[in-house]
Image (cartoon, one colour):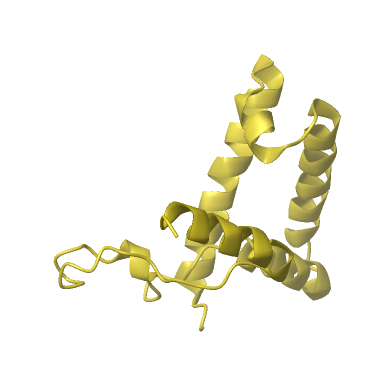
Length: 123
């Protein structure tokens, strides 16, 4: 997957918006965002402090710091514009196939899954 300068800029902007949202939630005392992340207020503040320090370093002339920040931005799960997830494709383009992929359950749950499917099938 190739990241162009525009893709990286878009990812930085999206990250900035997410950081602002988290900062607003922490400042206002709202816990919905923290609950969704599974973080405490102290964990969120520590993350925000680390992110801000990394962002400041990325603005320096140090190419290593800039590269580290760009790697962090890329790791956020944002995708360049040309890459699409199958869930992003409209249903009519999929040919009416709206069902997701099927995969095996994790090995820790395989026996429970098997018992559940046998129990619901009426056997």
